[in-house]
Length: 295
Image 1 (cartoon, rainbow, N blue to C red):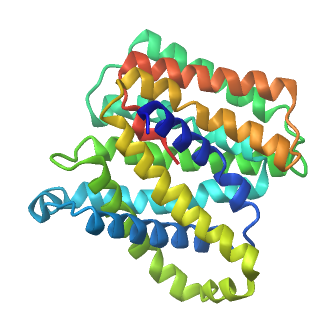
Image 2: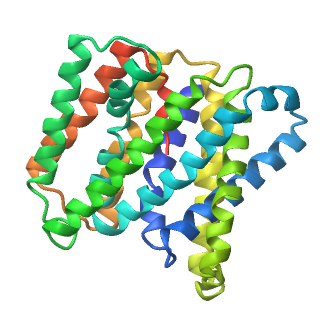
C-alpha cells in the first residue's frame, strides 16, 4: 500500500474515533483503559508475529520518560473522551489540536528553545480562534456545557503536549516500540482506578453493538491506525506528514456533522480554521514532529 494512502487512512480513522466513543455507554476512564489494553495487546501480538525485537536495555535507559509519557497518554485520553461528552466531536477535536501551542509555551523552559516572534504570533492567533469558538457555542446542550467540553479538550491537549515534550528525551527506540510501551504503561496506570471504581463490569451490559464499538476503538483506532501511521513514516517527508495529519480534524468535523448531526456555527468554523492553521504554521516554523499530535 502507498505510504500516503496509509497515513491518509490513519488520519481518517483517528478523525472518526469520537463517533464511536460517543456511542459507548461507559465512563471515560473505562473507555481509556480498554483502549490502552486492547491497543497494547494488538501491537504486542503484531510485534511477536512480525518477529520485531524490542531492546530491553533501551527500555531501561528510557524508563523515566516512557513511564511519564505513558501516564500522560492515559489521562489525556480520559480528558479527550470527556470533551466528547460535553461538546461536539468537531469542537473537542479542534480544542485538542491546541497541543502544539502548549509545546511552544513550555519549550523555552524545558527544551531551552527560543520563543520567536513568529511562534508568538501563531500562539496569539490560536488563542483568538479558541475565544471565537468559546463565545459562539450553543452546540452541545448549552453554553456552559460547551465551555466545559472545550476546557476538557484543552486539558487533554496540555497533557498531550507533555507527551510530546517527554518524547524528546526518548533515545534509541522506534516510534512503534515507544508507543507499545506507552500503551502498556497507560493500561497499568489506569488499572488501580478501574479496580477501585468497579464499573468495568458495565461492559457486560453494553450489548453486542457497544462491545463492537469498544473493540473498534481498541483494535482499529489504536492498533491498526498506529500501524498504518508508523509504517508510512519511513517513505514520507516530515512536511508531507504534517500536511496529511490535518485530515484528522477535518474528517472529525465532517463525521460529526454527517453522522451525529452535530451543528457548528460559522464563527466556530472560522475560529477552528484559525486554530488549525496556527498549529500547522507553528509546526513548520518550529519543526515539531508531526507524529506528536495523533489521538
